[in-house]
Length: 245
Length: 245
Image (cartoon, rainbow over all chains, first blue to last red; front, side, top):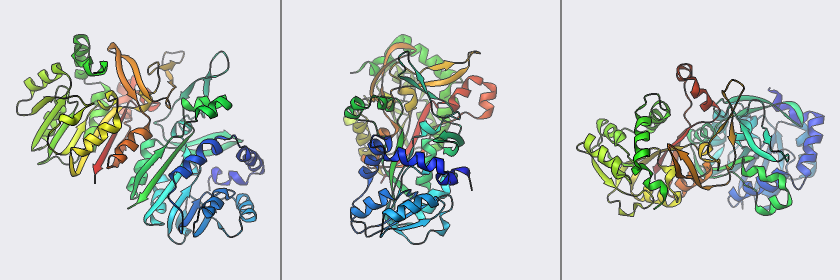
């Protein structure tokens, strides 16, 4: 097991993460979540799986949108503990996204929100997702933007004289592989992949790319929260909808 | 007509461009061309179109690889003059890639090498390409990498104390639209689009993405020509193969 797989059960990380996720002005709530639901098909009567479900907040929303059944899986015991206590009627299972061989059943829609950058072998993951989808089923996922995961030294910005972001310091986009980054705590292991690697993996697994989103903050968001202006230089997230044919 | 459409008929640009393209160590020859041909299907007996054919060098290669017929189109009179004088038996026509409505016939394979970043309306272009492809036909294209076209001030690098590229100065990736850049001459008009815009346009036009390449220089290239090491930080090209279904 890699460090990344355990990080959500680190109590310091867990508390920091919870605060971050509960902030209504977080990039997750303002940018990632709206894009994820924009990519979602009608869930009425659908059998839904959420890979890396965390607290189960998205699972609850899938259920509210008419899903017939929702299964949430995550590697973190602590996440699942919260998920189970807050979402009765949804099935939660502990499972490592690096090894989905224990996953049982077929699904109409598989979601995965902000977890794919923790997966070491994305080709294998894409194959497992494709194998767990019914024909015509959808895979909708988000991850940290490849420009965020690229720099070996971690994502950083050059500032201008006023302390505003002047430009994003881009390095190592073509040097794919493991990244040891600091995020809430030290030594969070992530994996950098280029756009083409991510999309080729999905295509090779029999998933047709239907739509991509790199969310850009609205003028309203930037005027209220000027720190988001830097997302115009370098987006925070990449999302895709792919369909099994 | 935009400035970009005329730029290849500017004599200063034309001479500079010819020198650049004839350099066997150019990024075009070392990185772009091998990737373009890697994406090519078997051309035996195929009806092939090359959009933005320039001197017609790729057209000659398509013919050599067994194409039944090859048509090359370009906006530049000077390019077509060279193309016609050097490639007898291939049909060359003057046509603006921003308006393909005059294009006659259907094709099995449409190529476009390093011209798509000059097109203002890529959605319209993708529709025209799709409409000119036979069912099952391929569109294979290359363009400047979206990270190259992004900065409004033009692509540039921060140097370290030894004068080597430290990092790529990334700005404006999310600010899509016209870019007025200097390349050989001043005021070359190009258009920046994000990855997602480019791929969504192809998908919406009925073209399934089959494979993407962001070429990375080999160790051999970097050891012989150290200047190419910076392509590991920021690739120069994006290539895609899409198929009409």
